[in-house]
Length: 152
Image 1 (cartoon, rainbow, N blue to C red):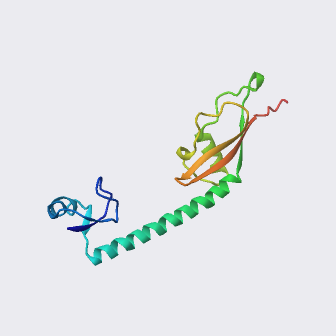
Image 2 (cartoon, rainbow, N blue to C red):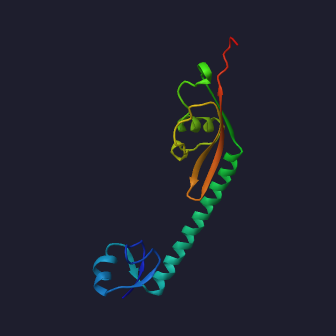
Image 3 (cartoon, helix red, strand yellow):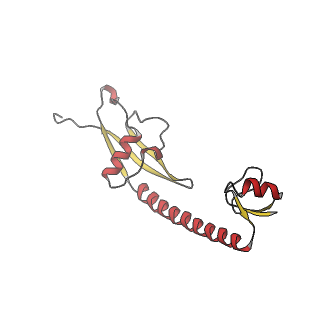
């Protein structure tokens, strides 16, 4: 029996594939489980239309993420931190701090998409990756500077 897979099925195929399976497997497991439809022209056409819509949505999201990446790449953040002797900073600059600084610049992103192997614990300039999409990663320049005292 020919069926069209709605979802990915292990050892059988990916969503949208037309496969030939035993009639009992299709009737008793795949079709009632919502994993497949009978392969008639109407169902095939419907799944192709859904796939086109999904592809268009993915392309729109990718375009949006690329525009956001271009904006983030141009952004430079300045983190002013307290320092002690020999320019050793107190605390660290974390993903939450970076997300907060971006929010102040008008860019709202989730701190979990900011990729830091470990928090920044030294003065300097860092290119911090922000993973917006599986295919789009932007780099934000973060400058860590000492906090100026009013007495100096």
